[in-house]
Length: 343
Image (cartoon, rainbow, N blue to C red; front, top):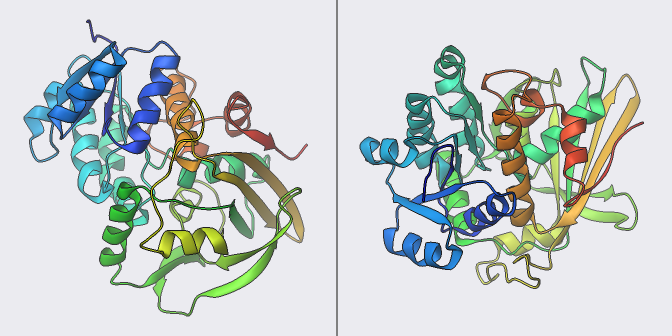
């Protein structure tokens, strides 16, 4: 099968990677499955039937170059991104093709912005980290909520998950982040990331109906503290997580997600509630859907489609809200998300 103009999915055998491959195939896009496990790649390719396999490892630049040869774009779904993002961004820049990843690791995203911005800008190549449920969706919602505002005092991103059954990849990525910050917690305040050892605090968050008031962990910090401030003049970004989801994630006995429908989604539901405030005025944007891992696929694939179609606002390393028309992007996700934006 010809692979000219294909989209390469690195980490295609993982939980999120399989969702991304399925979404690319659903859209009729030629797909190359890449990753470290050649046997598993071949096994899945036999099921898919129309996907080419290119094994590659991040410690072998030549194998990455071969995996991306002739491709139109690459989507990195392989964590921990502290290990994979750098080599794959560099390979994408050598190939002159866009790079999108689904990293939720705060430090890995900071590293992508810090280490690759100049090279990506000079090459005129789009690099979009955290184009996923965490980091990407909240950034799009906050950007859409800001509208014509050029600054805001604070952005709140509240995650209303009814449960969270983490994948093995999520657990490994969490361990890597925990080690990188020496067990400390992190917040974005007064315009910078700050590490701290403060006690965990719970509070109530009034989600839109039908979820309503729920107990949340305050400063349950996610990748939004990197993506939003990368382009929005907001000196404080606060993120929150429903207590039940946080407890699921923390419990070692919580099993991995289990499919309940033909699309492979779990029964997890979510509400992402974003409130930006400036001068005592608040604007709210909300998204509702099913399965945080499954929704990452249309987010990442729509990003690739828009980049390849030239529907972008900048180049180089940029978050979702900076790279795309946020409100328009969210509207195009209507088959997957129910979105409410300020009028």
